Length: 224
Ligand SMILES: [Mg+2]
Image (tube, rainbow, N blue to C red):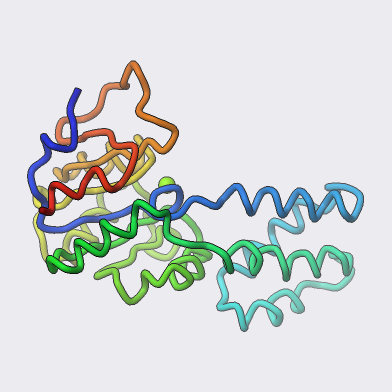
C-alpha cells in the first residue's frame, strides 16, 4: 500500500474544506431536523433549504435583510425564524478538526504556502472566516464563485498559479476520491486521501502519486 511516506515533500499544499479541515456537517442536519420536528413537519423543507442557501451567500449581518426580502406569504414565521438561527448555530461552534491544527501550524512555521479549494456555494466563506482560514490561506477557491468544480482541472490550475508553484510540487489533501484525489492527480499534483472513517480495506485503486491517510497529522513527517 502506498503510504504518505512515499510522497515527495511538497512545496505547497491545497486543502479541501468540508470533512477535511472541519467535520460538523452532521450538526447542520441534526439542527435542521430537530427544528422541523419542533414545528410539526417537513412540509416547508424545500423552502427552508432555499432560504438557507440564499442566506448563506451573505455576510451574517446581511442575512436578515435577505431573509426579509422573501415574500412573506411563501414562508411561515416559525420557518423564517428557524432559517435565521440554523446557520448561525451551525457556524458559531465550528472549529478546525484537531489533527488539522498542528499541520497548518507546521506549514506556517516552515513558510510553506497553502490554499483551499472547495466545491460549494458561498456559505463556505462564513465557515472559512469562522475557522480563521481567510487570514492564513494563500488562496481560497470556492467553486460556485470560481465557475468550475473539482475535479475540473481549471480550478486546480488556478490555485497552483496562486501558490506560484507547478502542480507537481503541490499536495492536494481531501476526503473525496473523485474530486480531490483524482482531480488533483489529474493535473499532476500528489494527493492525500483523507479517510476519517478509517482507510478502507481493500483499498480502491488510487491514481499514482496518491496515498490514503486517516489523520492529517500523518503528513507532518513530509514537512519535518
Ligand atoms: Mg470534502
